[in-house]
Length: 257
Image 1: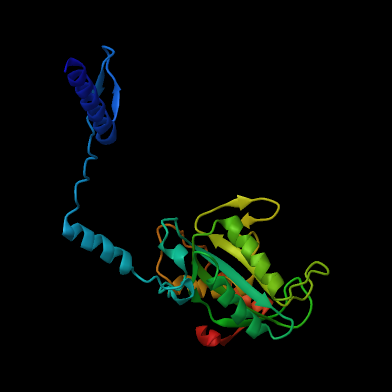
Image 2: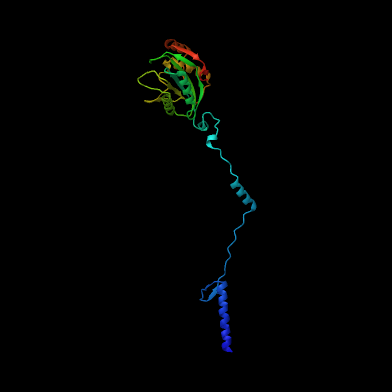
C-alpha cells in the first residue's frame, strides 16, 4: 500500500508538472527552486477621439490646389522687385540715334528699360530732331526718360550697354553714327568718377539734345527727396544752345504710342 501510494503521488506530480509547462513557462527562482512566471498582457494604446480621426482623414483627402507658375498674374508692372524694401531712386537717361529706323528703336529701348528688374518708366520727354554734335551722319532723334529704379548706378549702366548691343549698336570709331545711344545722366544724388561711369554726366550741360528734353521732364515731374532735381541751366542758356546746335521738337510725349 505504501509503494502504491508513493507511486500515485509521483504520477500526480509529473502530471502537474506537464500542465505547468504547457500553460505557464517556468524559470529558476533565485533560491534554486522552480516557480512559474507571470505572463504580462500588452498594454492597449489610448484610442484617439473619433473627431480627431475624421479631421485628419479629411485633411489628407482635401488638399488646396496650387496654380501653376505660368498662370500667376503679377499686377505690378515693374515685377516682384517693386514690392521689395530696396531703396528706390529716380534716374535720368538720354536716348538718341541716327541710323536706321531710329524712332522704332527708341520706342523699343524705352520698353526694354521699363522691363529691367526693379525698374519702371516714370515719364518720357517729347521727341526732338538735332544736328550731330561732334559726330557724323544724318540728324539725330533724341529724348530723355525718367526711371524709377532699385538698380545701383553700375548695374543700370551695364543694363544700358546691353540694351544698346541688343539694338545693333556698333562702335567702329569714336563718334561714329549709331543705331542707339543711351546716356546715364543722373542716378538719384550719386556721384561716380571711374573709367566706366561718371556721374553726373560730364558733358550734359553743353548738349542741347540733353538739356532741352531734360528740362521738359523736370518741369513735368514732382520733386523727390531721394533724388535731387538735376540742374537744367536757365531758359536763356538752353535757348542759346538750341540756336547753336539746332534742335527741333517733332512730336510730343505720345511718340511712344
